[in-house]
Length: 299
Image (cartoon, rainbow, N blue to C red; front, side, top):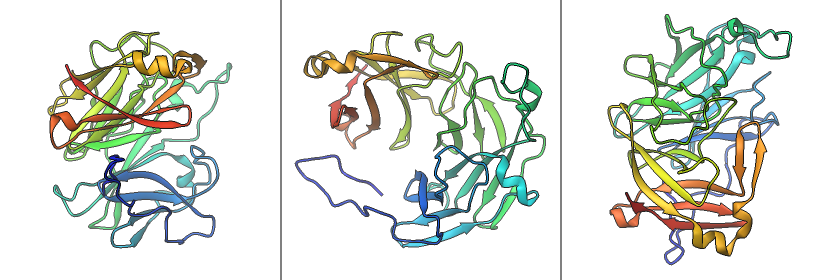
């Protein structure tokens, strides 16, 4: 399912709203993956998993959906869910998988209000659509690096990846069901040494995994678009963009503000779209209330 960004040849989106209503509380889209949508009961807070409701996988082309059964464990196990992600590629397999990260137990807080390291332990469960059952991975109870977040995931190259938010991120290989170290670009600005630091963008397009960040720690005018090597051994700079002209038109883009996630800039990178031809690749950027595309320049 693709939506064209070409304003000279616009296409009608396949849908503007979800047209299935299996839950009285409403439905929220959690993730899209190669034509399928992972949805869940809309409980209000996007990241509040306590008392989590039902999950659904919806195919907007066929208008069919599947209710996902509860994870393995007691009825209260759903309150331990910290992440749910969809892995699907129709060329690889007609069946889809779900990756679920759960706390290994209820977290207790230390004297300063932070979780104790021993309480930051997680388990992994994988749902296989062809069996309709969850599988709890053996020997996969783990303690991630401090400030690791499981808020945004991307399926690529047979593996599930989480947006880097710490110096030592991980990814999950689905064939071996094993966690692996996920390297960061060597030229990435030193922004991941403390607290939670997210890249400006992390996502996949046409079989390529991308990470976007500034070339320099405090200068947002120049961006690097990194691409991951197929063997997960590292990144290389695929494109570079200079926003100087855009900044001249929108001076507020240069403004920064601090948050728990580090310095934030007054613009958002929404997508990196790879074209059929190299010269058709572009980046989608939101500035104030405007969404525009910027052509990428090969490095």
